[in-house]
Image 1 (cartoon, rainbow, N blue to C red):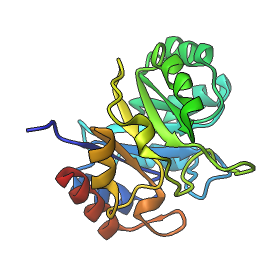
Image 2: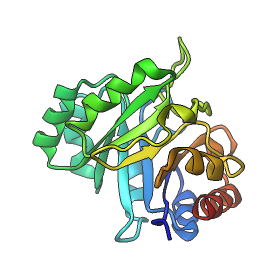
Image 3: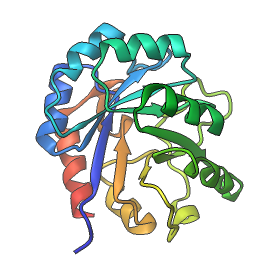
Image 4: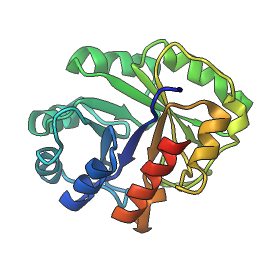
Length: 215
């Protein structure tokens, strides 16, 4: 049997969202620290939400080009297990953040065509995990969570030296196909389990996790 697929539900904002993700069997939960995002939470809100997450489920903080000052403040208040760098952070910055905070770092890399694949390889040398996401459209305010997919054939059959996660436009309707095409064993979803923008739906979370495990 193939190994189980791990699901990350990102952009949680309410205790009920955390409960729904846990109940559905998510292995990662993501908190977004980016003010332009409809999924943004404050440090105080995140600290409270983190307390709702049972032991053994990885709490991920999504940041975008965050300063050391912000990371110091946030990590001083919120019990986080992994940092997700979702901006234009360089490989050197990834290395710097890992060394400064002693936490695993997942770097998000946007893909829209074959020209983006060498960028993945560069970050594989320094990050603990890679999030392979759809590149945002030109002029987009959000680096992720745009509900867009990329051509999964671009990474079909690829093997990388560190764990990686597939993101971008995934829903309960297409996640099994995405897993079959890419071989992904880790899946990230945010907008695909929302009833309204930024508002998670417990039923959609449960359906997505079932579909991912079936894939």
